[in-house]
Length: 359
Image 1 (cartoon, rainbow, N blue to C red):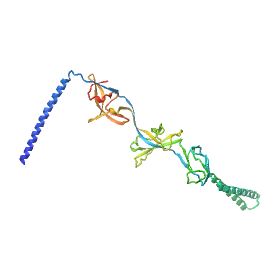
Image 2 (tube, rainbow, N blue to C red; image 1 turned 60 degrees about the vertical axis):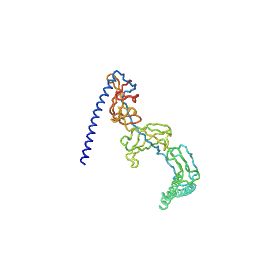
Image 3 (cartoon, helix red, strand yellow; image 1 turned 180 degrees about the horizontal axis):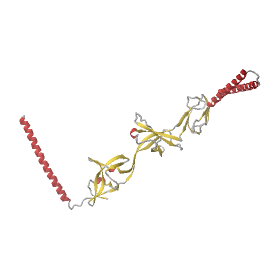
Image 4 (tube, helix red, strand yellow; image 1 turned 30 degrees about the horizontal axis):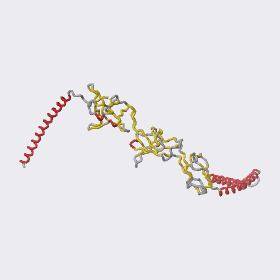
């Protein structure tokens, strides 16, 4: 066993010595190669690559995200009669624009009208009786009880009449808001009542958009911010402001809700229509922006090629950078290049670090 161990150690030592010799020979070869390349380069004309470069300037940089929202309308209501009865007339049709108080339909009130007629007859008699009893009472003739009974009977009938008149008024279906009759659900001759929807009335002069935004943008998006709104279906774009940003995060979707109020006098924006909101989440006034296609990467990090003059010759130089937000095929550069630097924008694929170039 001792003999085998010694043999392995001797073999490893021999290999180490052989490796050392090879490295020495490799170093000598590299020096010889460099010397020969230098000698061969003397008198040889260096190739020059034609490129195009742009001078770096600062500009306003804005980063946007797209969020899908849905149009809603506060004044989108279902109308039902306040009393029960058969529909005897419908005074509007779908699509009609009506004002608040406009009569939309009438219900059958025949029984109520008969009761009202009877009450009016009884009230006339009660009024005559009360007036006579009052005259007698003023002359200190008759009993106080007869006077009070006549007065009570008259007032009771007056209240009954007012109640029946109110009941007749409830049988008239009126528009509670200004708007458009979007749908008439019931038809003439059908029974209507407080629990049965009669028609849908919509006013979309004012609408709003609800949109859910990821919680990661909670600090970047707030009420009062400008927002660009696009309606793809009608090919319309408008500028608006965020009316309200919710302070509550939905635990299921991890989002918070935005509301944007809109004027819609043309009524071309419809409830439930989809909208795309462009929300600004970042802005920098004096930013350096380069096309993302110019940014390359190696083991040392991200870099771009710039044009620099070296000993009277323009050369492509690899400049390592620190990048920020990348959006819309542009990259925000935070470190590595400065205003006035010339970034190679065309021909960058044909150069390496140190290549001779011409503009």
